[in-house]
Amino acid sequence: MEQQEDRWARARVVARHAQRRGALAARRARISAARLRRGGRKYLRLLLRVPGRIRSALAQRWRRSLQFRTVFITLVLACASIFGVGIYLSNQIANSLFQERLTQAEVQTRQSVTQVQETFDGAQVSDQQGVLKLVNDTLATLEARDSGTPRQYVFLAVPNQDQPRNQWVDSRASYLRTENDIPQSLREAVEGSQQSEQFWESIPLTVDNTIHPAIAVGNKVTFGGTVYELYLLYDIQSAQETLDEMQNVLWFGGVFLLLLIGAIVWIVTRSLVSPVSHAAAVSEKLAAGQLEERMAVEGEDEVARLAKSFNHMATSLQEQINQLAALSQMQQRFVSDVSHELRTPLTTVRMAAEVLYDAREQFDPVNKRSAELLYNQVERFQALLNDLLEISRFDAGAARLDVEPQDIVAVVRAVIETAAPIAVSCGSEVRLYTRAGSIIVDMDARRIERVLRNLLLNALEHGEGKPVEIFVAANADAVGVSVRDHGIGMSPSEAARVFDRFWRADPARARKTGGSGLGLSIATEDVKLHNGWLQAWGRRREGSCFRLTLPLHAGGTIVESPVALDPGGALPLVRGATRDVVVGTTTMLNSGPATASPGVEAPRLEAPRIEAPPEFGGRTP
Image (cartoon, rainbow, N blue to C red; front, side, top):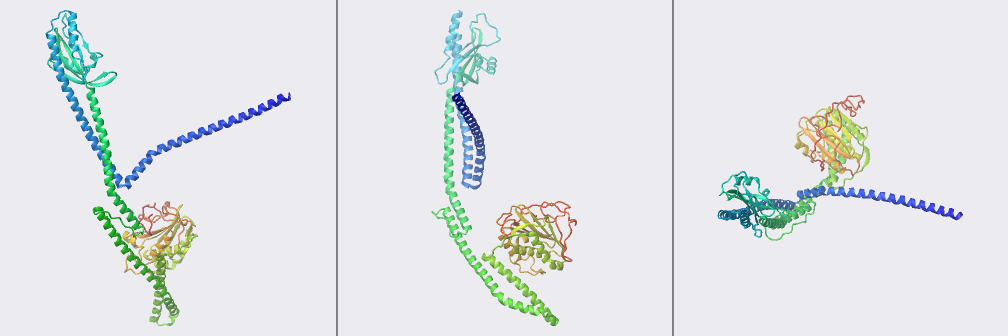
């Protein structure tokens, strides 16, 4: 009893294990099937992508390779020419073969019909058996199965005619031929014609379950007072086979000729394009600074002369570039040395000027005014000297960034507060618009503050007492600050040169804030260090707008600026602003700094006009 229970227990264990193995096998089968389906869909998607990839590769090759375009266009034109000539020759050959066989069929038919009619006319038989034998023997001579153009016949009595009493012959035809092989149009033409007239028509002829081209030629003959239609069927399959062979020869010859033309064009264009490609590669190396690169000169042909001229040009350019580089280094060294050497005497002069300026109240009016002029000009000289030192550091590549996360809105507010006295003296109101109270940017706050201060002072100087707007906004990648004035403005050509060193749109115009003419150049270099954009827009008598765009994070790239550059006749806006919306705060500097409350109504804002601005600061937006 215990042994039986043990066997039952072992059996249950085995059954459970088998059930588990079966479930595991089923699960593995389902997983394998799912993987197969996924793999099949994956390969199907890859196959569907192949034509698109081929088209993309061909389009890219078409754009970049002159040799590919030349060979492709030549092959297309050659293919069209060969195809047209092949069709023309094939048609001419087919027409010639058909006309030859048709002429032969007409001549043979006329001879055969004449012979048959003569035989019928000279017959001396009167019994039915003799008549049938004569007709069958005569028609049998018309067949020619073993010739190059097999011939068969169809012999039919013309319908709707008065039949004589002794008509013992009805329709006759060669083996497997019937009156259905004759087109109705040909029968009608023969029935309505005179006995000496002959008609023909091209017909399809079934031979051994194959359709052969054939020519049916019809005439009338009489026998025993009865009129008959006699049709001779000429099988011209041999001519069709000849034509097919000639067409195959033409097609194979055309393909071979096309490949030969392609190979010749490829070799010729390669011999012409290779020097051009080599010249392009050498030009790129020269542009990259490898001024010692030259083209290889082989032979004395036009390409060799081109290579000699190119090498001569490269040598001349190298000499001039080296001279300019030496002059530039001398200039930079001179500016740096002079700037450093002037610092010590200028410090002494400045100290003396400060002493005289502090004691000016004790002088007579003339000496007092002289002390004030001396103090102001020494201050201006100090600013010019500092700008020259900064430019020399940029030229020498010694400028470095001190990047830290800073609030650019706070920097803008600090710049506005610093420029408050100048805004009061110019009679301009400075307004700040921003959606965010704080925007954190990885930047060198000292350099960005200098850039913004320079832009604001320029706007105040050229604003002619009209309001100056500052807009600050950010997107996912960048932050933008635009400074807009409504003063004298500038033309597009002036906007393109406004960042050049020592350039002024109107040299005779008096400056209110002083300056060396290097402020915007230094600002451009500061923005370059931040991998940002500094751009300008202007229009005569409508004012100007300067836009600063910085990446939010150090080392980032800018896709689009969050503020507009060209206002299109309206304010340069924060992108995405709508009408009658308070977009920020207003800082008024005519009567001292003051911040407007959130309930102040903002000016009506127009949608910004997005255009690709001109390139400034060495970067293209």
